[in-house]
Length: 398
Image 1: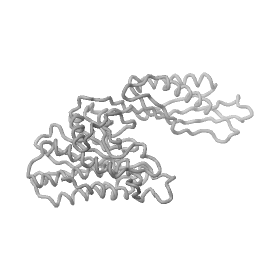
Image 2: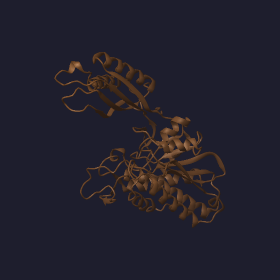
Image 3: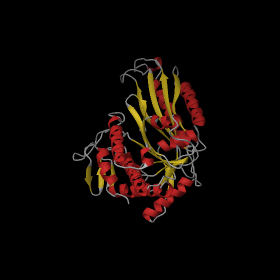
Image 4: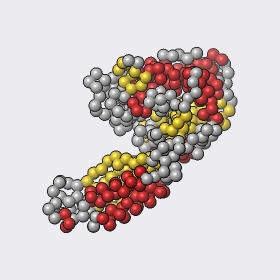
């Protein structure tokens, strides 16, 4: 029997803990979850539950992943729920009566940083995990397969938490892996690739009244930006993932308006769909640099690839997808839409690095509500996902 208030109450507790990244990070919330799980397990008596492992993995100083494992009869294909504990920065621009740490409830929605991405999903997975333990206590049975809950760090930045899970063997290519990212009622298992570049242009200064005596680094960067933007606009689209995109997210350079700038630095985020790849976009970058150096005399440019995540395509034959669709239909009476997740998630990292074709996202909220002031999640979404996660466990674990 699903405790329909547990995930909702737990969400309220989790969102009151600041785990912003950068900011407070995950230390406090990781300790909170560990204490909660251990307290719940101590109330139960069952040989399997006595064998439950609660493990921590310090990835960066003071920043840990947490994993809880219920061993099953088979360890061949484990069901893994992975949820990140960090949020984006608290930020500005919130309504006067809705603060980032306030946990305001209004018109069936919870407002708070992390409410949507993804503390409500984390609460649902914790709820399903704890209720599975209680069911085992009542039934006295051993789970058919092992069940894991992983709480990861650093998802909002470099995803070093999920990479550490892979490196430590916490997750394998054979596991069924679900993250609880906000998916607006859909199952999302395809991801655009994500490639990051840093480009540096060096020139030399001159007085703005005689710019020909200098080498304008910002003008050269403008040429690079224009060329790359057109390259991506001209790239082919993908039937599931749509179009590739480029964002020139951050730029620095120059001193004062009256000085020809001798330096400029640019940070680029590309979201790529097949057939476009990092290999091809690197050719774009190299060509754009050559063209800029020809057009702006005296400048020199260089680039660094700082992130390279491959695209993840749909796997309609995934057995986990089939089981998750059944669980959704059981709870809602509807067949869920299967689509592409526009961002990059922990499960995308796992799918890309391990070539695991049973990785997907399903969680409360919608991505449009995340990463902005007045972030919110619909309470009914929390209740729905809690039931779906529990049904998936009931059908495949218990």
